[in-house]
View (cartoon, rainbow, N blue to C red):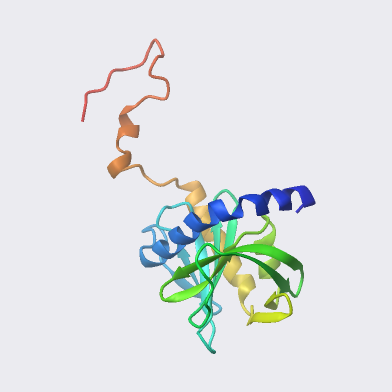
Length: 203
């Protein structure tokens, strides 16, 4: 990722990560019908309920039962969420954390505090190549300055990310059906002012 692109990403992180994180946990409770959750090498791969992507999760034994979630959308965007029952991070707090994997390092990377499922933690986003980096790494170490935050093993992340990509490809090939509150889209033409547009009855 270029320096300019990294700066742009950091500038808009607080505004777009929180809705994504909220949707991630809603998805965990109501996965899309097209893809059934499955366990791959110790990771659980599930679909987002909005049909825009998928995510993989893993809970690690230890104080606070740290949970890690990696979400990937059909547009290539991703977000990494880490949660722990013992942490006191405030929601929407902006943090500078260093993420070190066995194949890459992201020093002083911006993250945003969140709370979900009785745990506190943070969510952040990386460039489009991050899932590949994640898949090829053996560990993820996170620090806040000189303070260690989490040291997580990524065994099995390669096959899990491969399955994650398959899940995302499913929704890229099959756009979600429009229904319910979006029913108006079925009867509103792309160009209502075209000379040959058909009038459709009200529903």
